Length: 434
Image (tube, rainbow, N blue to C red; front, side, top):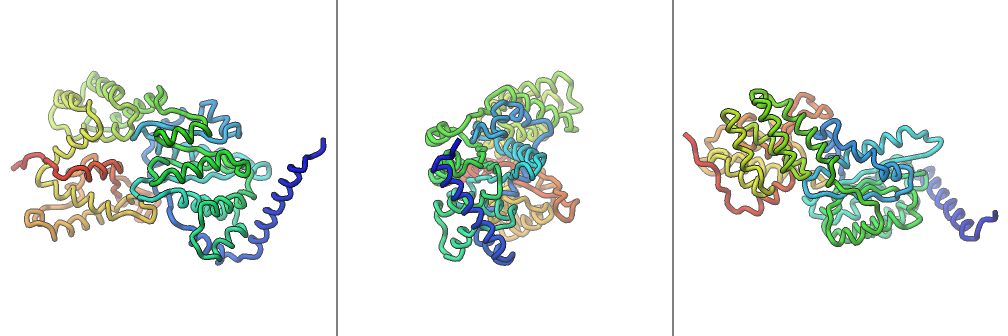
């Protein structure tokens, strides 16, 4: 069978791109490539990725990998998967796990047969930016570093000096794909991008344009009308409203409660009632479940007191925040406020709320209170006081990838906390106790 003229032209263009890529790899030295990487640098999503992987409970999130849609995605029958769920459903944790599964799939594929690479990106509302250009810049950086080459087209953009347009970045991406057989792009929380219209246009281009046929796109995003209009036409949908997520929540609850010392004194029927209550009211919200388990830890008294706690759990998330803040004592309120303000100042280049070393946070909060009101200056502030005052509003963990390895770090529970805080001009804390 003879090739068509169109096929021959496509082959010639592909060969031309390979020549461009080879030329730039041999002509431009490493310092020049580093300058290009620095020029592209805008948003690094890796802190979010590492944090989400850390908090995932073993055995959860595996349900997606046994779906036929997932297998079709891995082998290229589906170019785009769209996973959607309600706020707090655990989409970001799920994305971090699926990214790892994709990386393992690429790892087990011999490069001589199939050069495969995975790139991830996490959007975050707190950056207050359109994520379209930062997303493409990050993808380009990762592809070029992996290939140890920079396409000539991208060097020309760099040499020009101006901020590249989305069209420029997409054109460079076309060239940057040359050394690879397949590239998996995972992007989380698209709905959190400012002006998400641009980002949705980019995703449509990546999922439908034949020159990006090497790309397989995994997207996690909430359902809105504009999102449905774009994603519904280009992707295979997977909903997080299913029994698999319910089972994951149950596994998570059982694991957390099984490890919690305060639960050991409860009778078995109360433990089972606790699991059942969380299953009934969690509504696929991993974040909410985690927060409520931490709240149960604070319940004083016998199992009856814990049982009564369930009577006030059947409320929306903002009402739960109301209840949490109302339980904060007048004495502790300045400490909580200072902790939250410190996290507002902890944005890294990605706009992500970075974890803060616990001792450094204690020192910063102490300094903040020292220049505050007279009543706040005399407050005792130490690690235990911060833990007790903030409760489930923060999480504390050890990060062995940092030095010193035995240091404890503090992270804010969820970005919705800041939205809630900004919506409340006045807190009504618990009465002072003497």
